[in-house]
Length: 135
Ligand code: THU
Image (tube, rainbow, N blue to C red; front, top):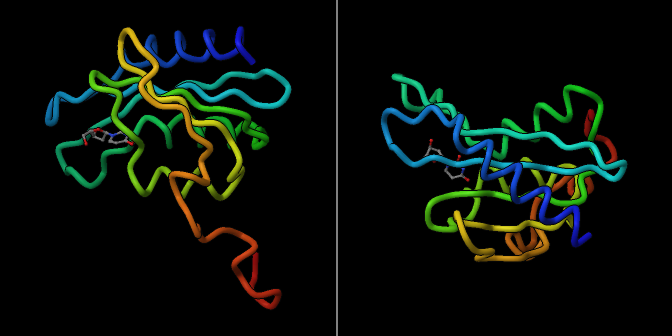
């Protein structure tokens, strides 16, 4: 995991440079790695209609899922201040792998190292739905 971790962090920092953030000027990069070692990156993409903006983590996760990858092992999230993922992104990640590792980084340091479940305790996931629910 150590080599992968460095690769993941570098990819998240690199993805951050593509962030489109004319409104907040808060650039975020994310890189997620799957069990077979495939890596997907994302950045936040803002919009003049503010709620149409999307976070870096969800870009990376939805890119992966749309290409048939859901077995996430870890995600690195790069910001200027080592910020933590928003609640919506926690929820979206929790859907797939509540035990995935979450690394928070700034340009220089690793500022946080969590299991997703720690960031979303008592989360609502697929198993929370009754068996009768349509999935
Ligand atoms: N943002 C992310 O990309 N990920 C998060 O988890 C937190 C927030 C983005 C959304 C918006 O473009 C900017 O950061 C400021 O909120």
